[in-house]
Amino acid sequence: MTQHSVAKGLITGLGVALLSTSAAAGTFNLGINDDTLDVGLKASLSRTGQFSANYLYSETEGKTADLGFQTVHNAAGKRIALGVKLVKLWAERRDNGHAVALGGDFRMPIAPSITAAIAGYYSPTVLSSSGIENYYSIDAKLMYALMPTADLYVGYRDVHFKFDTERDLTFAQSFYLGAELKF
Image (spheres, rainbow, N blue to C red):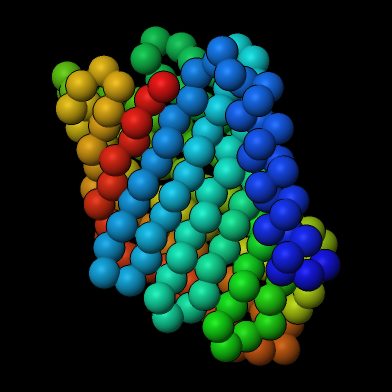
């Protein structure tokens, strides 16, 4: 699978999701620090399902993109989403690869206007290919509701790829600032 065909698939998937959810809720995320830029979109497919698309650029390590589907449950102000995402890596100095990762995220309010969020995904060897042995990502955020449709946050992420024959890649392991816009 070439970079062009994966990029074309990501754009097509995002377009289909946006067209099919024109009346549904969604969020747009932007996270940034000195070395990385993260852009993401989540769109509701139904009351209990969502589609996600994310792009993470690292100035030193390359870029990743992922498409995911999650089942969502909201109760008593808490939100949990469980699902799967297809991750594509375009590395600067290592083999490019793919992984199918399982995981989800959890959010809960901890004070008025403040929410804690954590997300984690893992891909074992059996779900990884093209030289990748496994993959994991962990992302934790502390969010402040600036207004009902916009949150500001500080986050910490750890994105890691383990390779079959090359040294491991810590793609991102740092704090960052961001905003989440709800539409």
